[in-house]
Amino acid sequence: MVRRLLALMTLIAAAVTSSAHEKTGFIEKTLAGSDDQRKYVVFVPHDYKGDKAYPTILFLHGAGETGKDNKAQVRVGLAAAVRKNEKTFPFIVVFPQSHNRTWKAGSDDGKAAVAALEEVQKDYKVDSARIYLTGLSMGGFGAWSHAAAFPEKWAAIAPICGGGDVKTAEKIKDIPCWCFHGDKDAAVKVELSRMMIEAIKKAGGDPKYTEYPGVNHNSWDRAYATRELYDWMLQQKRK
Image (cartoon, rainbow, N blue to C red; front, side, top):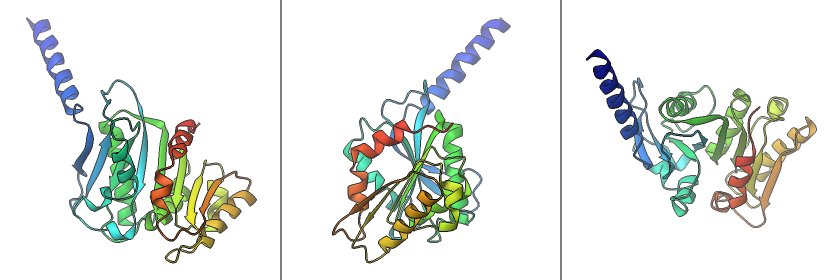
């Protein structure tokens, strides 16, 4: 009788776990234990069944999506690109939302972004050797900042129209990097990306860099529409 009861409890637990992960697509979440009700969105691939580990991207949005509605950050940038190929997009994607208009590592927003990623790692089967970091504009600055703060975490980074501290090049030189910027950017000077790429090269790294001629601040639509970006990410794996 006890054996039957234990077997039944095991089956129920398995069913509950399975049903918890049956939902796919864009899912709204609230960060556990957050005093200010931090919310984020996670995209779960449509073929997710919890039977294999998935590559995962942390996306940091731009200043214009700052807020607490948990919607603005999934209207533009990477989310827009995901929706165009939603049925087949192969990554879990974490979309935190900034409250204070910064993604600097160590800031409240920065800590919340990392916490959201860690929560997703607990709740879903994430391949810890294939976690990628990307962001646009303010999020591009955040990507450079978090790359320097946690260089051991990322399998690759893709900062878009942002800038970083060239003094951190030694810390991030071994992280595979593909950076994007428009050469006519009037909001964030293209020289900021150029300087980071040059600094990484001088430190011994081999970053990829795409600069779009004639493109103003919005270089992210073209960057995230680049299919090769995702193929390249999937080729990168943290040792």
